[in-house]
Amino acid sequence: MDRLYEVAKEKAGITTPSELARVLNVSQQSVNNWEKRGISRQGLLLAQEHFGVSALWIERGIGERDQVIAANENESPPPGYLATDELTELLTLFGGCDEAGRASILAVARAQFDETKLTRAANKRKRGT
Image 1 (cartoon, rainbow, N blue to C red):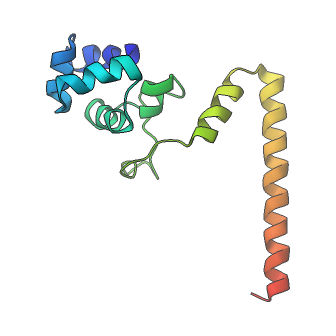
Image 2: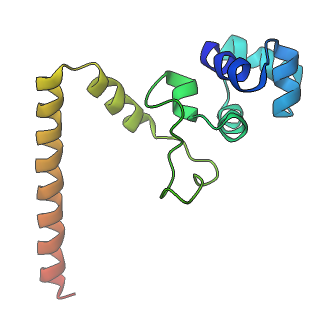
């Protein structure tokens, strides 16, 4: 909630839960629940849309705050888009590594990608498509 209040204050001058509820068009009880249990997916998406900040950054502090992930630069993210838990975990682990660790992770990921691509191509040839 700290990150949500940070952007709400910076971008809209919001400092209270009731103001946040009003701006996001949710009930005060919803905001109270977010404070106790964490922000809901719907709340994250509302905040992402309203304040123009990454839902993943609001939720977990991962990635660039003002970089909303989109299909391309000219499109908005698809409705309901949030990174998967596996991607979130991968980004968290990657971010916690030093430069050598990040290079190792990238090398393994690239090798796995290449192997997967070769396997798919071989399977396609076997099927004759």
